[in-house]
Structure formats: structure tokens, C-alpha cells
Image 1 (tube, rainbow, N blue to C red):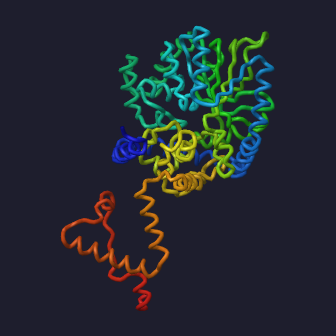
Image 2: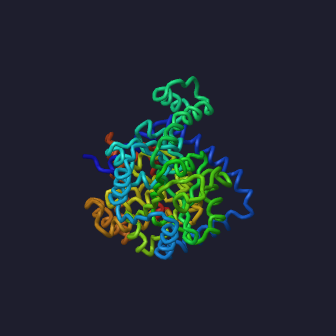
Image 3: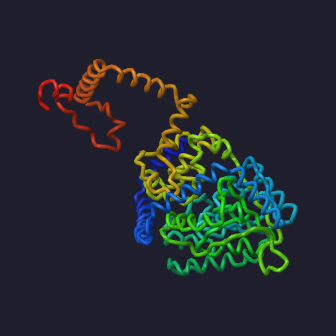
Length: 462
């Protein structure tokens, strides 16, 4: 059985050599970059928006217990239900039990990374429910029976031609790869699901404590159809999504949309606070909020790294990450990819994913674009340190670093061994061997100087 680390290396090797995959990814990220460059000048000061967003999210994380209880009370006042799920298993069990008790057979889902995190759809399908993803990108990858490739753009790795071929196979009647025709085909295929579903499931961008509202932002309108047409609406969200005040959305919504899509605002902004009232014309008859912990409380207890919980899932860090741009989203083998996934996943899923903290160049670009100013590349280093401190690295690696430390602590032995190593490389190379085979597999062989810098300094050559 292969480990998660071995799977990452296999995917990374395959995808970094796939020029077609890299072209599609580069094209889509270039489009995002172009949009971002056009929208940033419309801010009087985007850095101030980032600073205010970071302050709002910092306050929310520091007072998480207080704001969550306030949010719960407001929801319950309006007749809604709040369930606290400590684990993914508890969250799945609650939604599955609710669907079974209400006789639900058809479910529509708005985009939700948390439901991906807890693998909710397979659990519902196991009891006989038909589940439709209704976000266009999510629906495309569902048709392909694969997980999302990107936090915001689940089908970023596919070209229009590939999507047209998929629709032709699954839906029929597709005559071209024109985006309008493809979107219309998706709309027609999903329309019946919206009107027949007994349950709608969504995530949440933010949970507003003082108003008791779930705030959702989408560009396609599918979110509102999922939350208003079915009789039952279930929100599945992480406990970290709470914010203190309704007025905070005036800062967070534009900042989120800018960082995520390069636009000032998404098309649809929706706020939901409970089931349909007696004088309201739409909305669900039942409203449930599942607040998922699943390791977040342990991260909250870590004062050094708890600011990771500020994340608003904009995926800006993925779009600038040189590693993500080479290997793509599926290589990570996790719900959350890229720098934020590499930081967060070891905390949520344990030591099996420690390797992700090493899947980084530590260039710092992720930190520079994060709209809530999470020090991502610093946290990657802290994760590595934690892994070493807990003895979770191979013995051979630990011994190698101890040897390296011993070598670097003595200038004399460092100089002697450097000279010995260089001489050995030259002798072996002269015999036809390649002692640097691993290094030169993907790189040009370095040219070794006749003298070391130490020798040049001693001889007055520098």
C-alpha cells in the first residue's frame, strides 16, 4: 500500500511533465492574474483592505467561543437547529440521519469544501440518496468522478474541448465547445434536480454572530436555488467561519471576491437566518446548521499557529504558488490544496500528510497575497519543525542532518571534507560514473571551480 507521500511524488512527477496540463493551468491562472491587475487599482488602498480583513478575522478567531454561542442563539430563536460535530463522522451521521428520517431521496448541493472534507456525498449515496453538485465546476468533476482540483475553480485543469466531450458523453446533444452551449446544457440538466430535491446542502462563507446569519457568495445563482427551493436546508461549515458583526461583511465580501476571482463583488450575495417565516414566500421549512470541529479546536489551542484559522478559502495562495502551478491540485491528495492545504492538512488529518509542508519553495508569495495576512510560508516551516520534534522523520534523514550539523560546526573539518568530496566526484566522473545522478536527472551538472572560495581568499584572488 502506497503512502500519501509516495502518491504525492507520483502525481507530481507525472503532472509536472504533462505539458498539456501545465498549459491549461497556466492559461487559467494568467486569466486570473489579468483580472486581478485590472481590479486592484479600483481600491483606494488594497493593503488597508487586507489589514482590516486580517483584524476582523483575528478578532473572530480570538473570541471564537463567544461568537459561536451568539450565532447559535440567534439561529435557534428563529426556529433553526444547530448541531455541534466534533468529528467528520459525527457531521456525516447527523446529515445522513436527517435525510433518512425525512425520507429524502434527492439532494442538491451548493459548493462546499467542508462537505468534501467530511466525504458527505458518498455517505448520502450509500443510503440511496441521489446527490447533485450544482456549482458548474463541482458538477463537472462529479461527472468525471474525481475530487475538486482547486478550492475556488474545481475544474480548472480541464479545457473547453474536454468539458464538451464529457457533456457529449454524459448528456448528449452537444455540438460544439462554445461556453454558452455548455452552460445551457448544464442549466437544463440541473433544472429538474432543483425542483425535485427534498434537501439542499450548502456551505458558508461566513457566519455572522450578532445577526445570526449564514452568508453565502456565488456567481451562478445555484446557491440560492439550493437554499430556497428544497423543504430542508442544511448548512455544513467549519467553526472558524464565524465573524462578529454584520458590518464586517462590507470589508470581507469585496476582499474575498477580489482575492478569489479578480472581481470586486460576486454576482449573488445571500444571507439566511432560519426556516421560512409565516409571511415569507420562499425558503426552507427546516433549517439546520452543522458546526464542524474536526481538529480545528486543537489548532485553536496552538497560539503560535491559530491564525491559520483566519483563512477565508479564497485560494489566492494556490494561484501564485510555483509548486501548485507545476503539479496541480490532485497531487496533494487532500480537500485543501496549495500552501493553505499544506499548512492546514497535517493539523486536520495527522502525520500522514506531514510531507505537504515540504512541498514548498518557501518563496513567500502565498503570504504576500493572502487577503487576511496569514504568514503561510512561516507556518510551513513551523510544521516542519513540529514534525522533526515529534520524531516523525525517517531515521536516515535525522542521522544525515546530525552529521551535517557536526560538519558545519567546525570550519576545519568542513573545508577538509569539502575538498575530499570534490576530489572524489572528479575521480568518479573520470571513471565514467555519475555520482550526481539524482541531481542531474532534472538539472544541468554544476561546474566545479579549480579553487574553493576559502583558497581564493587565502591566495588573495578575491
